[in-house]
Length: 526
Image (cartoon, rainbow, N blue to C red):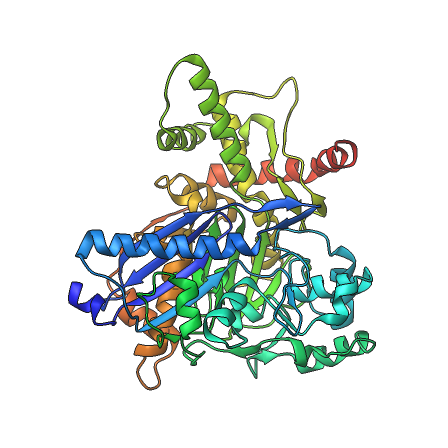
């Protein structure tokens, strides 16, 4: 392996998640051989969820440095060149730059639920769902707000696109990531020209068109440039890494999640559950109706995907686990955090199917699907509720998937979308089988978690980079994944439990009725 790495044959993938930047180096068999990570967290600054540019670059360098340390420790090797690199990040949001490349306003992440007016007006104009998170909604909202910077925009992109641009000099996006900026024409795999024309009419008083400021759209396997000398120094200030590595189109965490779970074929799906949670199903046909709860995005190859994205998943759960840790410390014990999570999850399985009439709302931030522009985490019960630890833990886990279930029910039940398999990955599935079982009960379908589920999107973007340099003539992305990556891979599948499915359905109906409580908390608690 030392010779393989030092000869420059290894492929690198780096993903900017909501709470962690992760790097994965893969070998000839496509499996991870080394990794590095940097923990970070977004900040609420002047009402905007954001990360600073310094945080972005410091985090990237620290992540890469730790990867190099892992390579040195494991193999006694140093990375001086790479065969290919891919960058990925949390999708959507707003990064706008002037002609000098200066960021005009702080990075607005997907977590901001501040574009309701723009989302509603664009959805009506296009007759196509435009969620609040999408980059075009942020741009239009800035226009509606009369923000002075809009006239100075020379380039608008996403976090993944920004990193790729700085390291390669090319302003491009993978089609999956681009589909979270603006609607894609599935036939051309490019931005929808009819809708671009409609938007340009809205922006006719500005000195740019969308064609002027948007990045070029590429599909999986296309060449997206090479690592420049300046880019190599940005990534590795030590100077050891040489330029020249080929770079694949930058993708979003949705696309890399599909790659990492072998879910790019029609009628396959995946659920990614961490700080946020989203469920994706590759569609056979267009949906019959426009549903604001369902994003229409694409696979990295440009196939249509129905996506239910929820802003909140494990953040409130994490807060409760850490509260319990603090209580145990005050009691005089020194609890191990991993054991606390394991206990919380396993005890939840002992709760009543309907959580004993205990409700929790995990809204740390706003939740678009249920119409909440900000978050107010809540625990609600009646005097007659069966309020014990098992039911509280179960209700907390149920709440991580409640909004996802509301959205997926529209797609799978109301629209009748067919689903052959669905794979779970992300932090919710770290404790064996618990989150997986609750997910199966929530969606009333079998859920598989693969042994590689913990590798996540950093591995997914590494695979997309490897596909670009290693694919054979005529080899599609699904063929590459099926035959070269996942052939013989093992996973655990759990089936839904009928009593628990019914219990989750009872919980979700109470949850929907109780949204008025969440609204009251939002309106009355600052």
